[in-house]
Image 1 (tube, helix red, strand yellow):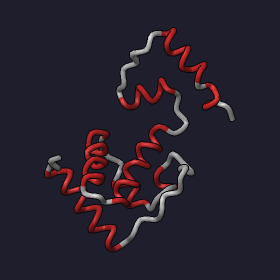
Image 2 (cartoon, one colour):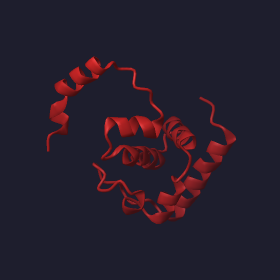
Image 3 (cartoon, helix red, strand yellow):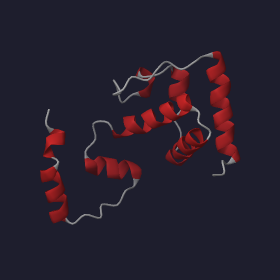
Image 4 (tube, helix red, strand yellow):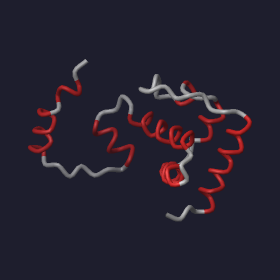
Length: 117
């Protein structure tokens, strides 16, 4: 896939900084939905960007096999999901709910074990 100039610029910015200050390993599962509690402040600020750019960075990092950048961007998306209901996740990512109420009820019933503490 083609990597846009703006995305490549961010990739280079990441790699340049990473060379001087390596990012701390990201614990899985995430210990917090606040990225500044997961990685150093610079990296947290780096991924405080529009969703579209974040997703393009994920694709670029995957395509160019830059594991630390892929880990950071994917962890950022995970932090955006963490602790949210399906409705909140749909709202965050502008996902249309195409299930009928009956289908949704059936899926919730089949997967209620996921929500058990």
